[in-house]
Length: 79
Image (cartoon, rainbow, N blue to C red; front, side):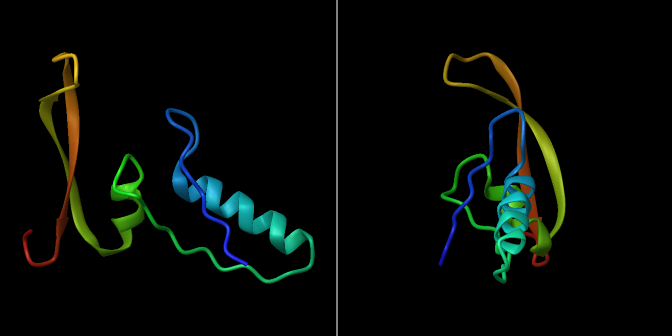
């Protein structure tokens, strides 16, 4: 069985939700393995965290042109 988690915006991270789902599966007597994934939205950087060498934040704008901080992740090859 595959259970796919989504982050709960501004409340629970993808990893937290995935670990809670796995704990429920284990409590029911089955084995569970957590593999983080993303559709490219808000959960992308947390899903990539194990392979990123660092994350940074940069000024940007939301769709209504309000100022926001935009995260970026860096891989080992500098990309």
